[in-house]
Length: 220
Image (cartoon, rainbow, N blue to C red; front, side, top):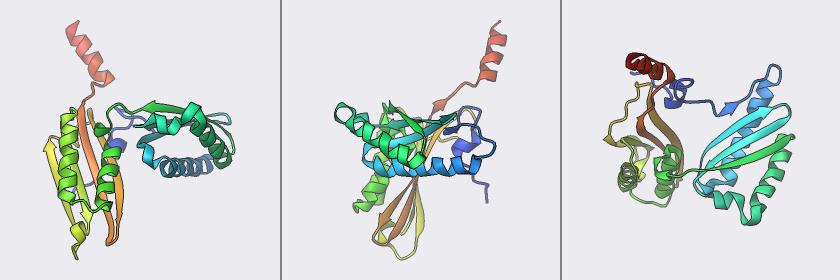
């Protein structure tokens, strides 16, 4: 068996950055649990807004939350009413001053988390899993992805024995550190059990700083 690794964790500090950016000596566990609470609350509260990523930054007694969403209008609301309500709810949850920064996801079909959630939603609505997977792959490839892989596991189609089915198009280099591989995971809660959906989207290669310096040296 191969050793499976998380595509983001594998590339941290090379082409990827942490989703939580802060430092603490004494309150580390408490702040970590607070981050998990904030993420779970926002994902549940804004599920219909297509949230692909939540970044948390801390400085002194302030929390800055960057929400990457496909539908910023839903999060902000009419004249910013929804975002004000959200700030008040977060202040109760985190018990410290909160700032919310909304960032729009331009191409949701290239965000693995949103693709996984979309496929999971279709499976809950009893759409055939092969059709849901193939359509998601085709959409991502049309939007400019260089490779897509979607995997569904569980009692697919209501079968007695759970199994794993996957579909891939293009190339998805999991061992290339400079490869921008976006990874997302979602669960479809069906009447006959939970189906897990995993998505890998290869969006091209990122030139790292040492490579840039090396190329500049060769050019000079």
